[in-house]
Length: 592
Image 1 (cartoon, helix red, strand yellow):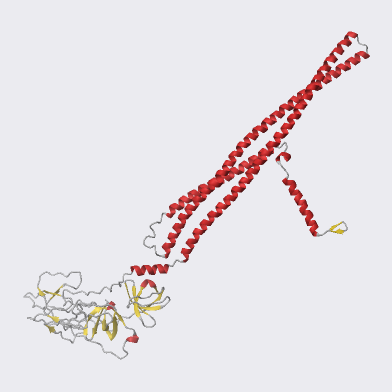
Image 2 (cartoon, rainbow, N blue to C red):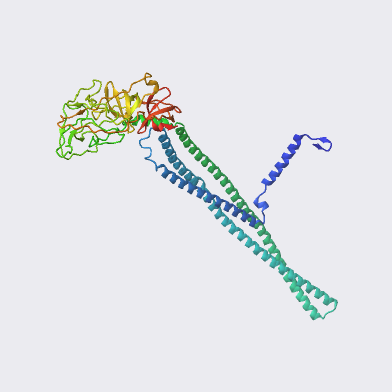
């Protein structure tokens, strides 16, 4: 910080540094082609060729980019038209709306890319290509000028050298001729010989003087050409400098345009993407699904379970060890045996709904049992006495000749149940004590020995069979019914007081008078099990919230644990921890 012994402030040093740097910059900025590239035509030409190659590279880049943008624009436009019909019918839902926004953005992007390619072509590629072509033409002219100028220079140098060589040669000959004359005079050459030497010396002197004048003229001409050469060379160098300056400024301007066009292009794309983001933010798949369900709901319930149809034996007197419930009731007609001891067969029509006041009797030697079910089925019967099992061993069958068609006033038309006396002779195991069960569906009896009931009624069940048929009673009415139409109530809803086993009356056989009764054959059978089939309780976990819209549906929450009582066609009859029961979609749950 000291200059000698005098302290120098830092600001002074900084000022001096700035001045030095400014002078250096001014010196650099003052350099020029004409002053600093003299006799550097090759360097100038190489520099121009480098600039020409640079412009060529930029043009190739722009051409390829424009091609890519145009191709991309066509591809995106084609892409935007692929899925035109994919949102038909769902235009109001949030996801299809967002997808439509994506397609519109793709179409807008296609147009934007096409516009971008057009702007690059018109504002950058074509002007730069034109500039390169113009500079190439100028370069060719300047190259021709410099070649001609160099040729003229060579010619001028050659003429000057010839004049100089001739002048020097004649001057040397003249000098030698003069030396010979001087020598002859000193040595007293003969006058004649001395005269010849003088004549030769005089001629050479004249030629030397003439060549001197020619040489001087050549120098004058060359000096004049040098001035011209210098001026034209500087002009050519200056034009090359102007070409580079023009090229640099033009490329800078075009690159600024490229940046501005690209920035505008990107801004437009980003703005179009913001529209998609707004649509994405409002996507609500659950709302879409609920709107769909509200619009398309069928207001239907799953069909009731398919009921079990028992087999109706061709010969009710046949001994069997099957545990299946056997139909032994209905309107039957007993006929006496023929002379050959065979049973004379007759056929009766099984009725549906309310029984008729008299039995329908038809006789036929050949009858068939259709596979369509119990309704409208012709059932072959024969003369027999009811076989006794251990359950009805001490019960005598009651013969009934009339049918009572009165029905309970609480049942609607079509659900009347026959009150004809029947023998409870069913090969079904009895329960230790009757159980209460609630009807989940309406059931209309198809046969006289079946029990009709309405949804919600309580049935007192006293028998259950593994085939799915149960036996029970409602207010004194008894009969068979499919077990999957009911659900046994939980222990908390069963009466705690002990119950006695309900023994049904024997199955009544409505028949014609017996002319030749036969002794009842004794049938020995194992006593049926008195224990009820075990009820396996299974649980499930709710995976999704379900808001029941109907009275028989159960509202549940995610992660709630349910007890499954029954399952049919994708629906569960379930009970929650509060004891509430109802239907729940099976696919809203997962088993535990």
